[in-house]
Image (cartoon, rainbow, N blue to C red; front, top):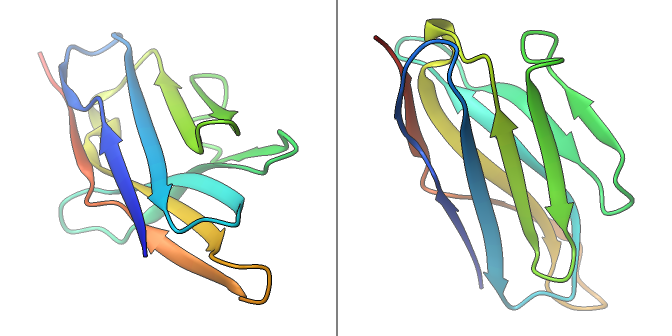
Length: 121
């Protein structure tokens, strides 16, 4: 099994910064794409940013230039540096990880439990 654990959420004022972390652990042969998604109250879960093991990144238009995703392959960990935060960034942020648990397995999708980010004065 694979465990995905996020940390770093909290309350921040508009214009402030916050960094989220996500670590995958357990039965891991190789980790593929890792990413952050978010879900605001009453809205669907949406992509924030993804990163491949090569370092290739992808961002939602709404966070480009404000958020930076990074990855430490040695620790199976990703980070999301968020700056110039806006009230509309308020959401539960979820980490998603694609993992092969053995040489013969396919990639399986794992989610963390989510971490709350609230942007408010």
